[in-house]
Length: 515
Ligand code: ADP
Ligand code: MG
Image 1 (cartoon, helix red, strand yellow):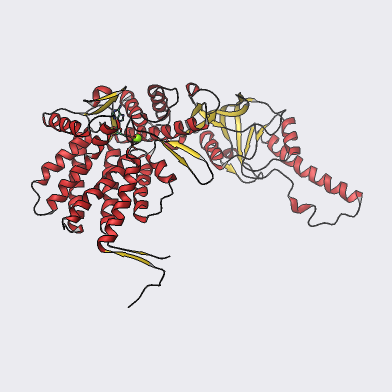
Image 2 (cartoon, protein in one colour; image 1 turned 135 degrees about the horizontal axis):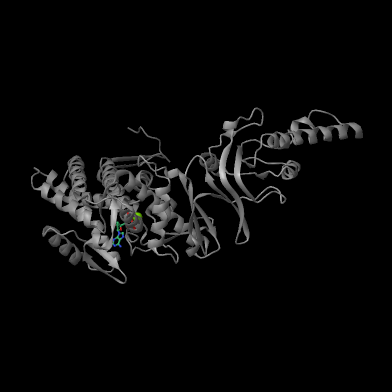
């Protein structure tokens, strides 16, 4: 009996499983070579020929046009990881892929998918405990945060900048927007990119930078102690007034209509001048005539701001966004110590510094080419996120695969106490976790088997060891000596999201695809 339409494609049982597993493995394989400081970059070209060069797992997977539904679930793992903690996306995707690969072996040996799923969940719980145990007994001070930032950026194309310089910038940016209660207002850190100078010119601006210039040449370019209005309204003639509604039959009528327009526009300028506004940031248009009148009044004005720029200025200066000019109140205005229009390269940029309401900061990223600044921006976004996570949780663990070695060891230990075939699944989980140090070794050009053997035996002797890549080669050594640390939450999230995706895929035994 047919219950599905003829065009429906249906794959069932082990065929469905192996199709899903292969797709998941393929995704993991695609990003595996980018893992770690010696990971390679990918060049992604979209259908319009746009090129992105990146080492960032989430970016690679999002930009790849992935169709297979199970593969798509792994892309979601990377996205979840990115949203939750901002880093560890490659780790999570690779781990999920390897959980699937190990499951495939077990399925071939007739271990039931439900048994595998249960085993993986138990193993994940043990892994989370092992992460708790791996948390370092150190104060998460500026030095540690710098290491966290640097560890998340190594391997990313950071132009001519040393990871150390960038890490300092990231830490001071986050410290600026941290409240006394230790909460980080991450949204108050913005990244502004401008191609042109060398990446060495990247700096931290204690305020907001926007890519806007004044609407009129004769406006002041430097305003101190500025009262600020953020306006979501067009300063133009309401078009319906003239042409649409009245018929104009004579020159007198036309003049009258133009006078009325002029009057309306003058009204805007007068209202703003009477309110003692110094600077107007408008998201909509400002008519050229109004601009000239504002210039006459000595008011600095910008129009066509993006919503995010307007929001940032409002937050930093304490302005309320005004939708109209009638009944403006004192509370509508924001305040900044400086609003400066500066020439940077061959462009005019506007800096709003010393906002009264929030300590907003901008990492002003420079770089020789679009590709350099784009990748620098992605690296900085990750670093800002991980430093935020580390500040807020106060927990860091050793990086370079050391925590994964500890996880695998704990899970393997626990496996011996688990009955029946589920034990196989728990052991398989430990083997899958090994993929992280193994891949770090491979990407560093070391023999992965030798490295694993050495890592395990030294770990059993009580050492903290990871795969350190310094310069041309790698060694097995203590990551803490090299300042390689990751936030504990990045590891936790990777274990959780990878387990969730892999087990979800394993539970599927029927793929019904409408055409
Ligand atoms: P992800 O997308 O998972 O963050 P990365 O390419 O950023 O992938 O690699 C992260 C891994 O690289 C982490 O396990 C981290 O501890 C490790 N790592 C960072 N810096 C170093 C280093 N100098 N030596 C060895 N491993 C490092
Ligand atoms: Mg990373």
